[in-house]
Length: 234
Length: 234
Image: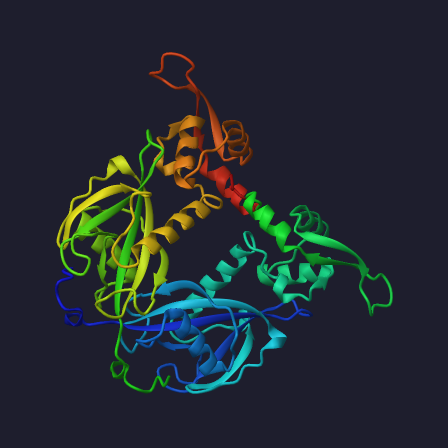
């Protein structure tokens, strides 16, 4: 293609952003995802990922944050770019390319509310988040896989826990993110072998019996282990 | 943003694709990247990643393949999406969002030639690929890091070697991709511990003395190890 031609000689696709915000509830072992109910066609009344068009004067990251806030009232969420979806027929309105983002949050901290073109906003179990608008089933599937893979090379999950936690609590978080049960003995052996936790001389409070030992994530140890090429795959 | 409004109510960014094609030469330990010399402003005469605008009737993947072929004459390269770069000021011509792709090829198989708006196309050592047009220095840096990380969870590099290879040849490929020297003993111990290679009852031919044993990549073993959560980090 000849770059000498004026940019505006070419018909342009529209560019959108969509956000896959995963939520974890510490007492539950169910991975949730934040959805909005569409107020307008196409797919009116159907559930979809929050998102919308990118403005000319904002970066993609800014657009994702703005759209998430506008449609669900959630702010201060660290969104990471996931993948850009650009199949020719993914949107019945015409050619729309969407840059998808994803995030993982502690569910209790965020109470979504539907705004602007979202009739409603709510947390869904990922398994119940089906028949979404557009290609959002596909975007969600890619995000779930990315999240599972990420556990293997980054200490995700720790920011969902209180600073001091039991290994059972940590296992719950891992099981929720990985969407599968883990063997308790193997989990403990493996997670301790990563050498990124400090065992504290403290035990759980507010439990009647069999109070478990508390642990703390040690980010310095983690950085050292990461530089040594340690893999955190369970 | 209100989806009821017609799509065309909004000014649209232009959307481009850019390709980071890495090349490895088996006898050399230098990672190369394919660049084109721009024939037109902006950045006329400067080197850049091959790329161009996405057409309304083609997917992003198709656009990347087409632009790479048009500008460098290289075809049949498996391009994987890297990241989408959308800083507001990344292109002096206006708002252009680019979806970057990357690939790794055996350098000897591909003889690039400049076409259409590329005055020239050539392989550069990654360390000499500096002061590129637009934000292409940044895109290249992201691609180098992605390539290095990928070694840890996928058996990349094997497709660059002949079906039977020595551990020294394999180490050369890994050192090229990782852009650092590896200790020979540690490399051998680690790569064999992954249990993804078959040691053959054959030795190198055409060498006068100290012919080394030949190995073959076993994709079945690899799949098993991957399902077991094996990490291939060196």
